[in-house]
Length: 244
Length: 143
Image (tube, rainbow over all chains, first blue to last red):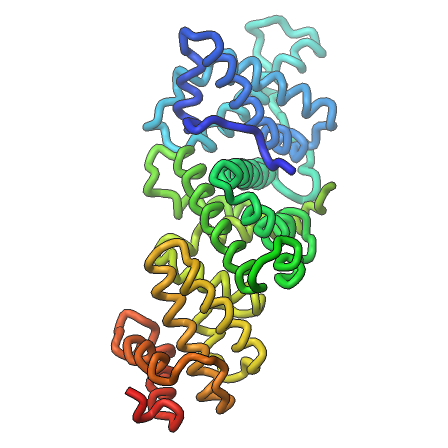
């Protein structure tokens, strides 16, 4: 079972973004795919929470990724001293949706380009599920980071010969965390992997849990202009996931 | 396979919480997680070991996981803390239940408990537990 897109070792949001402008077409194409995969869920969740249908949300998400992210429009403002990448992306998305809505309304009422349509400049309808669009965005952003960290750790475990450790962690921690499964008993895991004791299973789970947490913190740090503000960002993400 | 958004959010919440609580003392964070592996309601390893309401079976399980941490812990800090928590669970069983739950020699256990008692960087509750155990007949005069 995999948990997220496969980003390369150098997957800093800022650096991936920079690689969009690479002369090497392969590098640029890979960067595009990585960015699209990484941000799709949060952008889509925001559109859905605005009240758009699934189909419209998918179209808007695709449009934003193509017109703004992949068209490199963010490159002009996306420098590492611009603060959180998440905030920049959300502001850009809000602007995009506002502009998209204006143009859509202009087409509907027959306004010509250049005419003003402030009176119809509303992009929102009732949030779905009682969650604000911003909270939906942050919540999905956090989910993507968690999945990304899990996938990175999963791959590292197998590369490091810790496949059994990973499977114990998955049964004890990852699946209960993501899917609400009951954690598999230590004794069952000890039998399954022919371990010396159930205590060994518990320790294996914890070993990988620490790797996961370290990787998650690194993932978060890479979206920040100041990596020392990981705690602040974690607190904001926690508030977002709780819908506050 | 999907999760309801409620339980999924709770899970993501847990992951973020783990990331928030781990960096100040990674070894202690690992010990806390181990404690929750065997007693999900435990707030920390120290609470689990020092709580008078914890039963002997749970203490025995705690002793076993900390014993393993003492041997297979990833870092020297993990193994050192594992050794100390191992000794403290033995101490807890002795102090709270008057049971000796290990084949380790009392002298070896006493030596580790003395180091716990002398380390003012450790939580006061843990040091007090070590002190109480050292005063018990099973460990007194075993230096």
